[in-house]
Length: 289
Image (tube, rainbow, N blue to C red; front, side, top):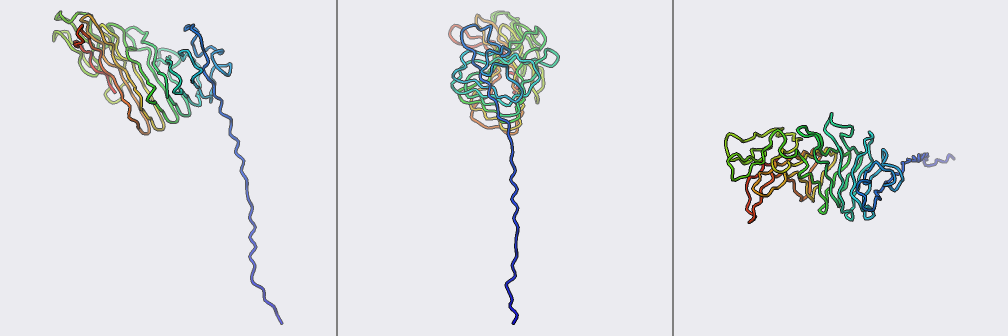
């Protein structure tokens, strides 16, 4: 007698285990304290928790232990891992980026996220006289968050009084020759023979606001690969004035992002002259967003 057995299928399973090794992300925290503002530069190694200035791949952190304002003056060509400002940080970070051809530091670059949940980013007031020198430029490889308790504010950081391509003058409004500064439009004028004209790009605004009796607004350029979530404020307003003087024009905000979200606001308003009774006159022109 011949016995038959069910056909057996033998399956050999080989399991491959892949081990992925990730480099540990280093966080370098701003720990500068005290009242010596002149020592509050990011380029000073003792101002950092790692006892060295931030290196490529590191995440810059500012939190409750980060007491003093910071001036970011690191000119090394590096790509940070990211930037985190907690809601407990209430200081101001001055980003020392320059327009191309005006200095070594032209862009703050990071591969990851930039989270501003507290404090303020700004840039150095324009130091180039009639030439654009200083603005705020950052390239962010991840997402950008500007929380409700944070701001990017470059108001009054544009051309000084009364400089710039759309500059006004410092003639009081009770004189016919008074002229507020222009940029996105025309500033207020007392005589049609004295008005300054608008300037700059409509679709890619990167220029500073011009000065009159007050400084113009600064300029912000942000390039974000991911989502920009703005629940706080991004401002580039001109400076308000007093004593019947014409105002500076608003500056510019140029944001390029994969997506835009949030309930915050963008401003590039012209400065106004505020009278004794809080009435307003001699408005500088708005900037461009």
